[in-house]
Amino acid sequence: MDTWAADAAGSNLSPVFSTRLLGLTRHRLDLALSLGLVLLVGISRWAAFPASIWEQDEAYFGSAVRAWDVAVNHPHPPWFPLWIVTGKLLGGLKPSDPAFGLRIASAVLGTWVLFPLTALWSRVLRRPLAVAAAALFLSTPASWLFAGRAFSETPATALLVFSLACWLRRAATPAWMGVGSIAAGAAMLIRPQLAPVLLIPAAWLLWQQRRWRAPILVPILAAGAVAGAGLILASGGIRPLIDALSQHAEYHFGALPTAAHDLASSGLARALGHPLAALAWVAAALAGSWRSFSSPNARILVLGALLPGTILVLALANPAHARYAVPLLALSSGLVVVGARVVLGPATPAAIALAIAGWAAAVIPELGSYRTGISPPVAAVRAAFREAEARRAIIIADRTLVAFVDYVRASEQASTAVFWDHRIEDRSVPPPPASFAVAVFDRGHDRLYRSAQEQRTFSCGSPLLRTLSQDRFLEVTVANGVEVEGYTPGKPLILIGGEPGGAK
Image (cartoon, rainbow, N blue to C red):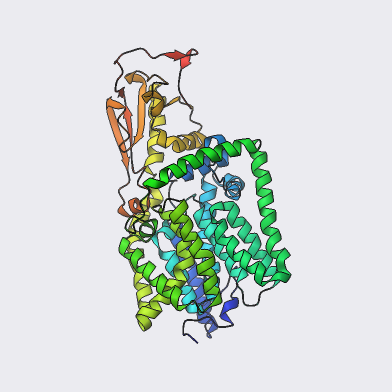
């Protein structure tokens, strides 16, 4: 038997919770090390809980928690129904921040994932190596710094690996099959994009375990039916969903041809902090896939989950987004450990420890500002509303900031009128006079303006956070007293219906 391969005892580790993660014969040592690891992961996630949201999708989710409206992307397709319900259930934790409950749920599940991920890889590897695979994943910058965000990837990944760990237990029972399917349904309702990653293993399981079709199939079908009915009811019919999906698909797939597909700018390289780390991860995962292919569980994970997930990211999403790599890192971390064993042999533990230490050295210095600093788009939009209220002015907002404008309105009940820059640019809406205009725009989106009385730029100074970002909303400017290019200074504001015209 291969020295890395799972044994009969280790392959039934509970994916819910265990105080004996390593499976050592010395029970007290195992207990101490297991609880110490849980504590370390929990502290790391608490230390990396950000002061605010950072990205557009987080803002859309937060606004949807406050008020569901698919016509304005609250939320955007595929609507993430269980994630929004989670945010509503936890909304009382911090009523002034509609995304706070989502971030707490993500951080909790981002800590708990230690147990199902160790259990999943214990179906392929010996328990100490399974723990090493989980620790490797949890130490990556994306896993670490995204755990406290309102994104759906972290919670969906936790439930994804939990469902697979339940399905792949050596001592399979109808109860564990059913629990795995409930978790699979929940994962798909939190992040519907993961459906193919779960449905292929589920189909294989239905073929293998014909006598247990009901506990495998019924929870998934029930989750889909409830979600579909709930979406239609919440949206006022199926037509608003079709319209929103059509509009989002046009925007999403229209932008894909411009996405970068090289390894250096990939989401994987961003998620790991450097292209060389991504190259090493891919090489080790490929070597591990080849070496472990004799294991049925490894084949299911590679062909049924990891490969479809990778194809989805490369073909149907923007592969340069770091957060899309989070489930792929979880589904490949054990293969990386096997690959390291193949290449490095006895030096594998030292190499894994060095990788973890390297990521810790990169992440830890950023944690102080991450925990206390408001992100540039949130800080800038808040400042724009404050300036406009103080001046009794109108905000001219960069249309790419629409999610953040909606989010600040939802969280702070801001009521200042907002004109969108593209409406002014195409002359659908006239600009306010410079003395009554406050502009807020992302880097490079200032072509509408020719002058300003004063301006302030809110920037992200962390190289690591910039690496993990989507290359936007990193320098957002608020300008007071702006004059719009192409309009005569001092020309009176045209009134529409007796009030300044503008879009909300």
